[in-house]
Structures are given as structure tokens and as C-alpha cells.
Image 1 (cartoon, rainbow, N blue to C red):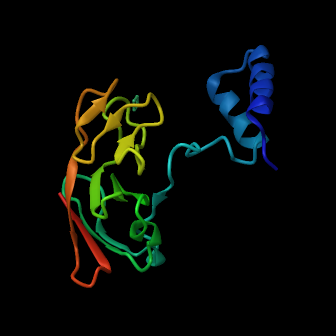
Image 2: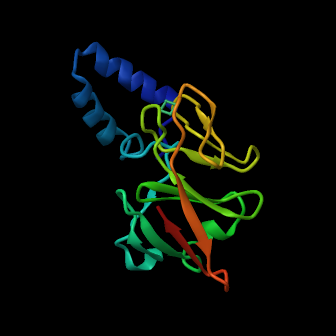
Length: 165
Ligand code: FES
């Protein structure tokens, strides 16, 4: 069952009126909305789990030694212009120009996952709307630091994308 924002607000206002703590309020939200208000928000894409065999991802997806491959036959979003995936600490996208890019996924302002926007060919943070170019440069604040960019290489047959630090 969908819970509308209006219903969430009413429930939240009611619970706040009871004087409950923030963590208690979050527990109520989780229970009352069948998890729709918890975990990743609608604005944050779900990370691909590299431990799932079917994910098509193998290698190191977090930390300073990022080095992984993506089997594009299993990650169809990265074969469609505008498609993007959160993979470990990175966001990988197929740009409007038809090339793959990989950047650090967390906005340099407060760490929210950014998302690729095909119309603008850039990355936007849904939290406070910072914008980053495909080279990671800040196009609009409040973020002031660039996103780290990773190297991408597509195999000759176009089926395997390699991302390295
Ligand atoms: S967390 Fe991204 S703009 Fe604030």
C-alpha cells in the first residue's frame, strides 16, 4: 500500500506531538509504511551488491584500490544511455554521448548519493542540489569539492566494463 507524503506528514506530526525521540519516530515510520520510508530514499539508487553472483560485478568496489569489472550482459542499465548504477563507492553511468564514466558516488557536501541526469549530462545530488560535471567538477554548490573520477575501459566486444582508481 502506498503512503502519500500527506499521510506521512500527518503521522509524523502526530508522533512528534507525543514528544518521541527522532530514533523512535523513525521506528514508527519503518513500521507504519512497510519500509517505504526507511533505508534508501526514493532519491537514492540502490547500490549493486558485488557479492551477489548474478550481479555481474567482480573485484574491489570500495576503498582506495577500486578495481572491478562489470559484465554488461547482466547490468543492462549500463548499456542504455542515461543509465547508471551505484556500485560500491562509485556511480557508473553511460552518458548521453555514449561513453561510460565512473565517479565517487557520495556528494562532497554531505555525502548523499549523486545521480546521473542525461538531459544535462551531469550528476546531481538530490539532497541540496549540487551539480557535478562528468569530469567531477562542481558546477553548482553548495558542494565545493570535485567528485573523484575513476578510469573506465570497455572491452573490445563491448561486454565488459573495467573501472579502476
Ligand atoms: S549533500 Fe549533496 S548538496 Fe548537500
